[in-house]
Image 1 (cartoon, rainbow, N blue to C red):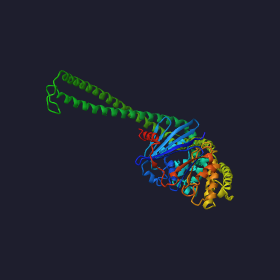
Image 2: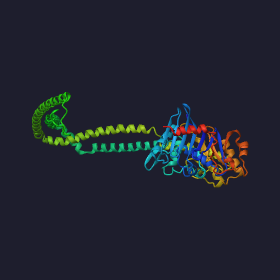
Image 3: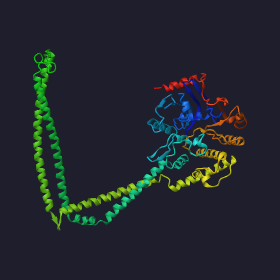
Image 4: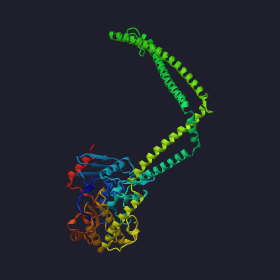
Length: 576
């Protein structure tokens, strides 16, 4: 089941000025309207700001200077049911209250590369089951938070002109368009592609190594000669080699024991020196008779002090005796080991002399050793080839889990066709001429449109509605409110406005909310009532900013209508 987020309400509050804004959002259409510069786009940008997006902070500078917080009460629907969430942002800190009133806090999120912002990105990735990976110069990594919202947001400015430009920080990713579309259409992710490339590089490496080792084994004359020498001397040589190897191992064990006991002897000797010094000093610290070594006063002469003095003396004497005995035993062990080492070295020298004198058919054991190295190398090569072959088969099996380039291109072409059918129908509904060229109609080919002015605006709208419709078929993709900021550009007049509103009312997604903003001045030919009555009817929830007449009117004086919600917000802000 998809993860779907609904925004139930938004609260903006300035404690410094005691001003606020509050509205609810409903299912289906939510229409924000008001005079130009009344605060419609500011409200939409604050929705994104409340989710930790910093892209529009400069545009929000004026309202952020009023020391506001933004609170979104939301519902997240997943397979296990619906759960309430509160997202509350104040300056550089985002608070998230989950079900059960657990409050999470992300401090210092104003920088997208900060540790807290990266933690927040991971949180949202888990919340929305979002796994888009993007490739940059530093490698493949998790996509920024903006990409979670990008399919569902058309910004007021560049969003109605350029595709995938509603956020400004996505330009430096490699193959961004393909990775973005592949992920949202369920075709392939950058992580899949990177893993596939690693497997393919590994297969190429394994094939090269197997080829090299095989050719060395087949063509080397040294290996052929080594086989002949081994047959002549293999029996006696192996016997002598086993004997020499055994003596060498025993010698190493003896030498290790000698080092260990040398270390013990040094430790015991140094410890005895310390104990002896303590004993001498102790004799001059008798209670009631000798002076304190630090203050020159007579030491206390109580019974307990006297008892402790004599007990410590006895302990020191016993310890000295024990250490002397250990030194004696250790020295004895060292002497015995030294003698064994000398004998073992002599045995090894004799074995080497026998080894060097032995020959058969004019082939000395010295030559046997030289060729034995080649034989061992040959055996290692055979083992290596076998191991590499097993690894190669494993990698080939792993590669089968990933789509081939042809399969990916085939999947893209299928999506291209579906998109083109939807997009062509939408532009026809909006009265635009049909475009047959692939670069203007196929999803993976489109980068611009052959239109200008109002026609460009309508084409971009058709594209976004078609893409939103298309990704509903991807079962793993989250669903967020579809946000369209400023659906009427300055040059969109009369009949085109009605055409746009009829199109939106007929085609808005039914499985999530749609939030859009409309410029409407109550003092100059207001049409919002007509839009509601004739077009939207019961589909739309209307949200007015500034009574339709005021500018910069998002916040108004606090009338205590949301006193309880504001108090609850401060409880979240003050949660520990």
